[in-house]
View 1 (cartoon, rainbow, N blue to C red):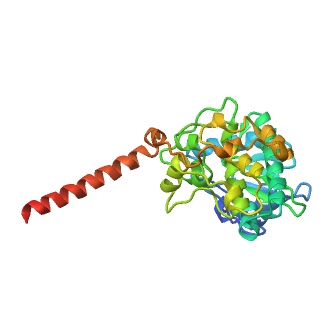
View 2: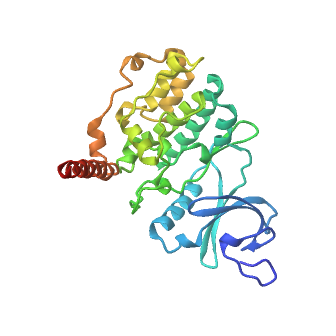
View 3: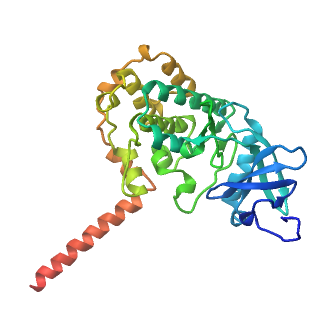
Length: 335
């Protein structure tokens, strides 16, 4: 990797005007947990593109490297207005890289900060376009598994574009395991209960994340919050979801029912797929609101104890309380 003067750079050191393979760097766009994304010009045809280069630290990490290779596969497969287009891939100095279309616009995270709570009609229109893109993914046997506002850009024309398929699950892909739960394995605010419990998930996992974003667009905050990731994940497993039509002005019972159905804890209780969600969004006046009469405050203690990620923390808390009680007991004996 050279700037033309003989100086060699690692991917993490690329600067404006540096050359990486047949691309000239024009600027740094973003840095993720496993890669850097640069604005670049393809010197072969003059086209501006986005260049995604993995951090050198993941090259020797089989799990992280597998995610990058999986994203290369996904980007070659999909073609939809709501999906960032993959233009190609390559390898330079033993470093793989991904070339995608250059998408400009506002991230959905910025939109939430600026405009939420959104008018229901605008939120419905945006979520429907995102659901259409994810339906395209699912129909090609690709599950995103990290749907969140940071991974969606909104163009000047209002078209959302879904990015970052590094955690995507593809048909026949072998399981990539993680030594520790972290943001690299998903983002707690948008993780489905089955993901938190350690399952791979399916298209209904993406549906749940869409439900979280839908709730956030309509209220300005996600349905579950906490002081730390463990607290947030616990809420996903046992917290109650408020009725949107009761707490948010302008949200109809029908729209509240749609969001609640996306956020059901059991995958079988959610929409079967994105097309079913889109149908209800197109026919809100026909949505059955009986789901709203069910208790949104139900808690599932059984899920909490079944969760492989939360059990160790629960045991640690119990042990800590026992130690404190024992300490007070011993102190009382000495008085």
